[in-house]
Length: 146
Image (cartoon, rainbow, N blue to C red):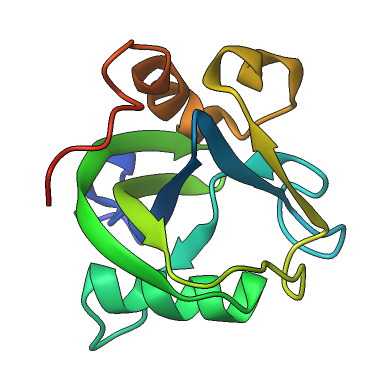
């Protein structure tokens, strides 16, 4: 007999994107607004992939909506699968290049430029921890030829 409830193994993950944006040796993080899930926690900017969008399109849209900024999406930096108590999430984190000179906190509580070694001082979403671990690698911050 089939159960009316989904099993954990068959639950589709929420597909999200994250932007890894460097300014010199610092990386951009944003703090979630108080009216969103996981209020006040820090994360890498990005968000959900909407139906019909590519991950790159979603990331550009999210950066526009959250920071009123434009980015050029480069290569995949990290892929993370994480299971929250509300369900699984699959994060596609891309290295991005900021194309605008200013950032405005229109969809986030605030933003900061932080050296990767200092990220542990912030309350960051647990799903972003593998990204932080990768950022601590000496070559992670080097800008590849594009």
